[in-house]
Structure formats: structure tokens, C-alpha cells
Image (cartoon, rainbow, N blue to C red):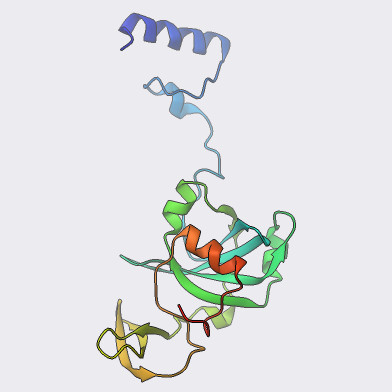
Length: 186
């Protein structure tokens, strides 16, 4: 453990020469720097982000935040060879499917890259009905989101309904590369 004198000398040298070592020695000097907007991005509805996968850049859009479940995100049909701009994201009209995703954690770990805040398209503003596997029957149950919780509405055979679930970054990339659709078995 460094002595207080060596730490103090290091701080004085850094202040004198304006050296940024990237190492936080404590105190207020490290917090005086301007925050980098790419590392301080927070998840909120309207946040557009890019996921890098084997098929290129895929754009995601946060539409809802649900406590204890994560952010509901939609992924674009279009893929990009280069990092997409906000204007390119605003031009997207076809979206694949929604899924719950731990966006805050993915941003913190830099597993996704924020693009900017855009207006959520009209048809994606309402929380979609989803389907969930019934553990008793093994079939599918249609569920809607009401008053902060999921309410089952009964059995369904509608495989076009998005599947209710929380997915991590690896699972998300796997589904993007395999061109997974809601009609595919989960």
C-alpha cells in the first residue's frame, strides 16, 4: 500500500503537469474532468443503441422500462455496415421483435453503444401483449401488462405474439445472427 507521501507526490505531479493517468487516486481532482457522454449514458425510453454482431450493426430502441424486469427493447430489421447515425435510426420503419433486456448493465459494460435519443414510433408506444409458456400445460398463455404487472389472459396459439422473457447480450446476439423470429421455438 503506498504511503500518504507517495500518493500526495503523485497528485502534485499530476496537477503540475496536467497528466491524466486514468488511475483514480481519490479526492476531487478526478471528478473535475468533463464527463464523457458515451460512458455516462443512461437507459431511458427513446434511447437508440447499436449492437455489434456477425451480421453488422443492429439498432435497438428502448420503449419501456419495467422495474425488476428490465427495459423493453425492439431491434431493427435493417443492419448497418458502419455505426448508424441518429438520422438513420429515425428512418427505420421495420422492427423485429421486443424483448426485455438489462440495458443499464449492458451500457455500463460497454456491450452496446448508445446512438442517441429518438422519438418512439407511434405503433411501439403501447406495451405489447406477449406470450409466456404455461408450466402446467406446457402451452402458451397470452399476457398483457396492467398496473405494473403481467396479467395472464388465457391460452393462445398465436405464435406471432412476442415471447415474454429477459435476455442477455449473448442470447440477443445469437438470435440476431440466427435470424430468430417469434414464430420460432424459444
